[in-house]
Length: 472
Image 1 (cartoon, rainbow, N blue to C red):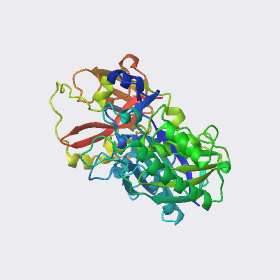
Image 2 (cartoon, rainbow, N blue to C red):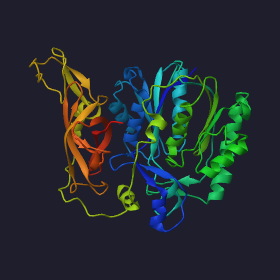
Image 3 (cartoon, rainbow, N blue to C red):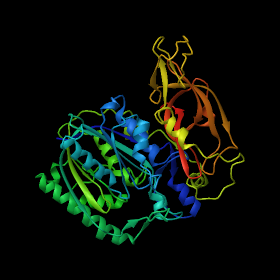
Image 4 (cartoon, one colour):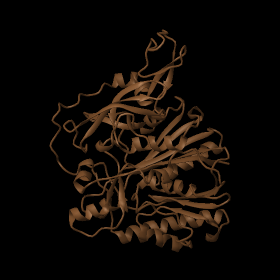
C-alpha cells in the first residue's frame, strides 16, 4: 500500500501585513499577513526549496520520479519539473511531469504517484506543489492570496502516513479562472462560487470517500480541507459534520494566505507535524472538481528540515505597499541604471547544466579537498584529472566578503541587492549573488546556505542558479 514517506514545505521570507494594503487603498481589510515571493522567486524556485526540505539527507538517487503541480508555471511550453529534478539532483531516468491549470493539481499528482507506487512501476515519487497567484490591485484577492510550496515523498515504505482511501469527482464550473491573457485571477459572483460550486462539489467527494472507508466524522482526528477563505472553511467543516475547534486543520490564511495549488499539501504538512500514531486524517482539495483522501498517521516523523513550523517565524516584513507593488510589478518604475543583461546562451546552459542547476564542483581523490568550481588540477595537492563530481547545494558555508548595490536592480528588485564570496565548509569558494539578507545584518563569517533562485531574465529566457542566503 502506498504511503507518505516524508513531507516538507517552503514559505517565502517576505511577508506583507494586510493592513498595508488597507492603508494604500484607504479601505478596511482582513487581519493577518500574507507571504510574498521575493523578486528572484517563482513557483519553480519555491518548489525546489520545498523538495529539499522534504528530502533532508535522504538518498536522492532512490527517487523514481517528480511531479510538479502549479497554476503559475513560468513556461507556457517547457517542462518545469525537469528543471526542478535537475536542481534537486535526481537520476537522469527519473519520470518528470507537470500538473498545471487546476487548483487541485497537487492532489491529482499525489493520486498519480500513489498509483505508480501501487502498481509497482515506481518505488518513490516526489510530489511538489507551488503557486504565486496574483489578485488585481484593490480587489479582495490582492488581500487573500499568498505564495508558498509543499512537497511529499510517496513510496511503499512505512513512512509518516498510509493512504487508506480516495475518491474524486470533476466539475465543469466557471467559478475561478484565468486565460492566457489574464495576469490576475478572475471569478464569478462569490455566492455562486461558494454555494453552487465549492460546497456542493467538495461535499460529494468527501461523503463518498468517507462511505467507501466506512468512517463517520467522529472517526477523523484532523480534517485538512481546502477553502478560498476562513469563513467558508468553518462553514464547510460544520456542513461535513466536523467540529471546527477540535478537528479542523488551520487554513494558514492568517499567516500565509491562500496559496492556491499548494494550499492543500501545505495544510497536510502542518497536520502531519502534530499527528499521532493511528490518527485518521481527511484531505480534500478543490478546483474544477474535488479529490478526497483518507490517511492514517503512523506517528513517525519525516525527514524534512523546517516544514511549516520552521518556516513561519523566518520572515522579513515589507515596509510598505509600494515595495510589494514593485516586487509584483504592479507599478512602472525607473529602469536600471546599468546596461541590459545580454541574452543567455542555451548552449552554455545545456553544457554547464550540472554545474549551474545542481551546483556541482569536484572533490580531489588524492587529498579529499572539495573545490568549486571544478578543476582538472587540484588546487591543494596539484593532482591532475583525479577529481570526482561533488554537490555543493546542500553544504553549509560562511560569508567571506560582500557588497550591496543600489543601482543595478531590475524593475522587481527591492534595493539594495547583495553580492559576495562564500567559503564552503571543508573547501570550495563561490562568487555569486546574496538574497534574503538584510543590509544591516550582513557580516563576515556569517553562516550561509544555498537557495535556488531566478538569476535574471533576458529576451523572455529566465536563468536559474543558486544564491547564498543566511542559514536559519
